[in-house]
Length: 140
Image (cartoon, rainbow, N blue to C red; front, side, top):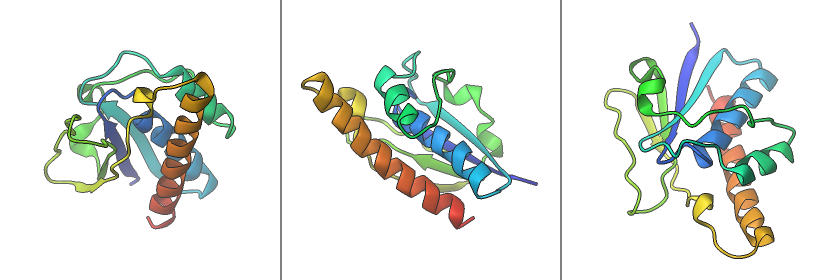
């Protein structure tokens, strides 16, 4: 039986989408029997275009992903829940009874500045997420 991992943030438009993309990538690369999901406590209704762009830079296509609510994933079947909410202004959901880890990462969708500055913020968060997801899956 495979391990089920859910990456949860607020909007499911950037952080958890990138984590889901890396989760699926590393599950395949490391030959792990893992099902990967992502969702948001308050889904934005879209996947952020800059999240799609910076993941494409890594060769991972999340352009067909959809922003999902917690009701859209098998929450009660998850073995691991990873919350990626970054600050007190965000409310991360609590999922009782499962192995939960909190990765406090700021929401790159809130980045301000020029397009290049926003891209740099997305890349920084993307790289942090990749490292954490790779380590998580290697240790399963």
